[in-house]
Image 1 (cartoon, rainbow, N blue to C red):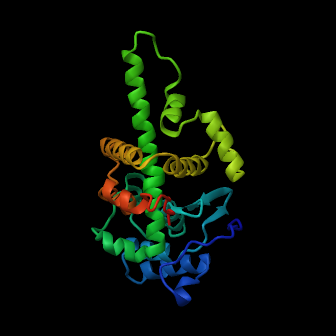
Image 2: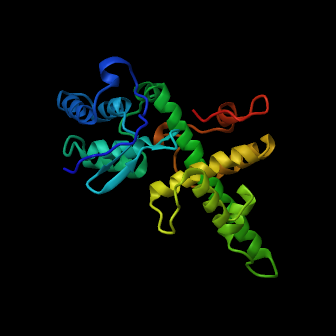
Image 3: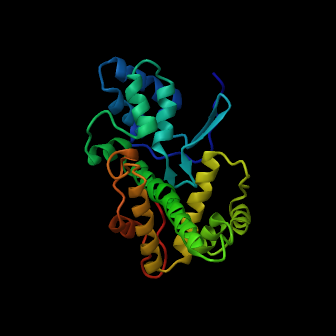
Length: 265
């Protein structure tokens, strides 16, 4: 197995003491032991996610970035990593249903899901839901609006729908936004960006949108993203990634207070 590498910042763990400080190999070993000892693999998996600390790592040539911008946590990516370390300990069809369909093998209450991850990780998970999943749905929804407008126009398609979407939602074209992203973060968004690189850019766009839009516009765009997500039938509201995103929850979490934006975590 290739050596792993992590970045400086750690993901907060679910508990204190020895469990909170387990190294990656120890988390994986304990996950295997719990399943072999009779625990349901999904519950043991969530507990392992709760103990995990490394925000990113490189393994066998693949980079896993679980925590975006120190704020948004993709727990299913970490679940994939952990399950790769436990072949044969969980039914293949259940693992595939979780990783590719977002379907849980157990009917756990949302409160139990949050408790197993821990408050800090669950908070960062919600940032991922709103800042990446809902934001991507918003982008797609606006692109679809622009395509419809172009089809109805007697003058043809006009500018590309994607660039028009960036200007409508974020106030600048894609190239301008990529340049600003590089200037602020030092990360260059390549034309052949990986999924992780693209999601990091999307989350940055989300944070920029919250800064530049007024409260009414933020609420309107949030409704649009949530409606698009529902139409796409991603089942986020039920089981995919363990959250029920809503406009009210979004407002409570991100709405500016006293004229200043709240931090994501």
